[in-house]
Image (cartoon, rainbow, N blue to C red; front, side):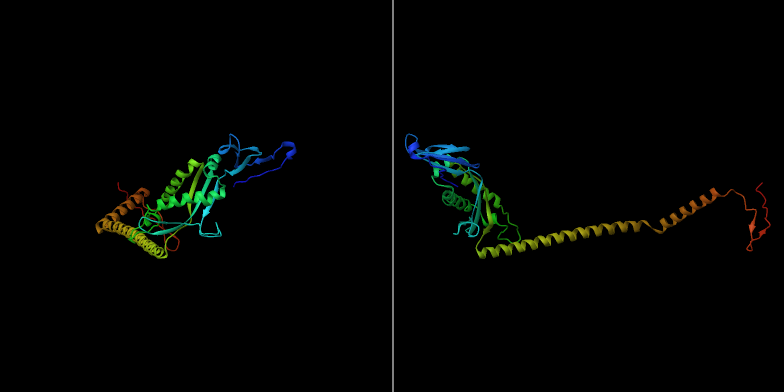
Length: 295
């Protein structure tokens, strides 16, 4: 914000004219404009960004905010100006839209700013900055379609290709083209609370988006069902292969193989001699029967 400050006045009897001294705070610049003499005019102004500055007779000092500032142009009186400051524009396909815009900017060259506008920050925000934004939004808005700003198409089975970021970047570039040469830099422009189409279009958009969501949901469910069916089919094929491999002949061969393994184990553990003692059922010993040897 601008401010014109006289910190103190010295008696005219001492200096012969009034003198004011002010401190230049961080994030501001002091611009001294000479009102008389060879240096008269804003073009010859002096800029001070630190320390203090004096204002004498025939001089005027303006303090300009050089920090990053933010302002929202909105229809909501609670957020911005009491008046409706939102922007309206018409798309390439003839749809009228309303937008609340939030802009971040800084005054990079206080002298150029003062030369160009000769107004304070508040006047710039409500005047030149708003005018530049309105013109850029009107021009750039006439180049886009509704589908470029919303995920909406006339065909409800197709998803729109909304790209509001590209639209906002085009507006930012256009505004900077106008304001940069006057010492102002636009850092960013965003929608505050989005875009507002007419009620009828809003209903169509919501209906189309609902159909699109249902279509996507059905497609996802179909994909999951196909994946489940493919898995079940694969498992069935594996089980069929396993079942087909266990024929009666294969089972008999397995039994024979196991029997042979059993006989081999018995043969390895038997020493070739018959037992010499047999225990009867009453716990007593029976006479052993000596079998003739193979000799």
